[in-house]
Amino acid sequence: KVAELESMMAETELKTKKELFNYALTLLKWAIRERREGRIIASIDETARKIRELDMPIFETVARKAK
Image (tube, rainbow, N blue to C red; front, side, top):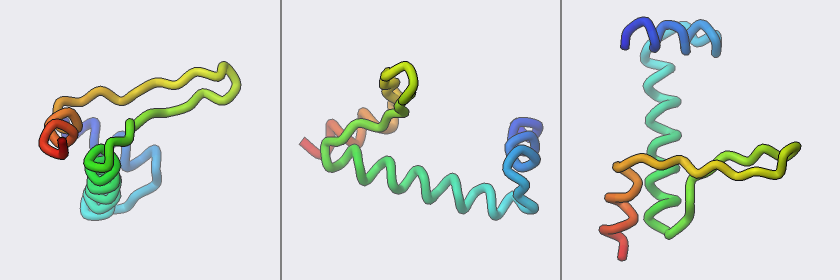
């Protein structure tokens, strides 16, 4: 997993793991808030007009508890 983190850091030109974790936590907090509100976390391929939902157990737990 360390190699994965370092690869992501290189791709995004982040200098420290602290930066990487801060961005990751910001994204996770946003996604949790969105699922709590009943929204779906997804990416959109505008060219192909396809939507791909992010399916992770953590988000299903949040959605279930919000009901």
